[in-house]
Length: 489
Image (cartoon, rainbow, N blue to C red; front, side, top):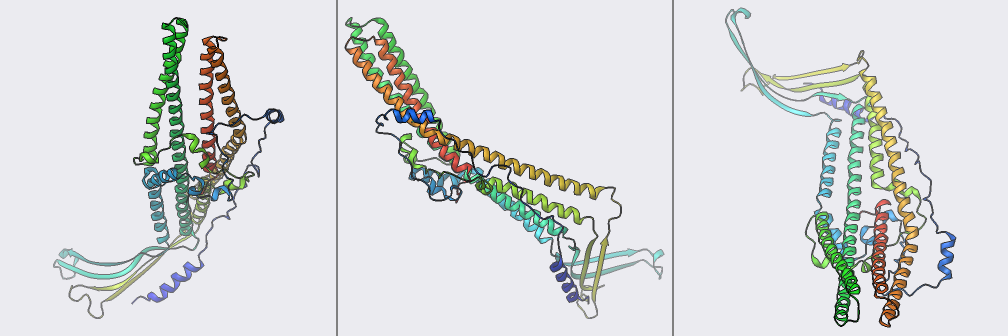
């Protein structure tokens, strides 16, 4: 019987002493500054703001959100988005979104591929039972008569098991591991993107609902004003020009109301698509002003080092590590490859004698393959692996540069949003006061109806612009959550 114990000891020693030829990994230095640029408002703007007393804020003004106490990339989304209805919608999306489900299945596929590579480190032991029958004509037998010979066998063993002296299989296993870990990061990145997309879609719905409410209120006000103007025209108090100008503003508000109603319906459809399931009416937002302050403010002075913890950056680094490991496999291909085939069992020319005494059999077939001439194939494979590693380095650096630019742009917008919001609030107050004065002057016969209509139009546009800035403010915080790799759990 073949000494399987001796073979087992040899295999264990081989596995314990095996090394790899993977180059030492060094994370490339981030080709970006250590800190994000700080954007400050010009001194003239600050001076003009302090010189003029602030107008009284409307009752639906935005309150400052509380400052975050934890790093942005560690905040769980439930802590970042505090609005209960938005939390429920996000949780519904995480459970039903099909893109996230595909990302999870990709992880399972990569995990299975890694297990396949890891299994290559061990011999595949099989039990084989079989029969071989052969007929020889009389010309080939000693007796001159045709003969049929049969052999029954039952063996256990392994075939073409590679002793990984130079780490080729271990390098491939390391590459598969990095690919698997990269898919984990891809799922995290997909989840963060999904949370941000749901939040933005939800906020957009709130934005269009508020514009719809404003258009409806404006339409009703202009309808009442137009009815009054028509009665005045019939009484001869106003001209036909005033009547037509009033009709023009009324129909404009009517068209806006229809347009924003369509936007609201489209936003609800978009939210249902990204969530992956119908969203109950009680989970939908009412107006934007009630939801802006639910997104936590980010702390100032965030270092650019946080980018290295973004899932998409980590995924790019995993791809770089996988390419680095592949170099080890390409290097190991230059060295001899030792494979073993061995089996032990029993054989007999009759089936009933298969397990009788003195029927034991074994075979041991070691092979060594030494590359001598490959016409440059091995060197070319190594060059390909090294170039692929260099490509991954460039892609990793580009990913960091792109992420830095995205965060810097979002922070630049964040630095000016308070100023823009304050300016729009002041503008609405000023146009509202102007409208009241124009209305009083018109009723007192001092001003024309054209001045009153112009004041109405200006106030309506200012209120729409204020709503737009509120959406930009909320969306910017969502963008920072995503760009800084906010907590995904």
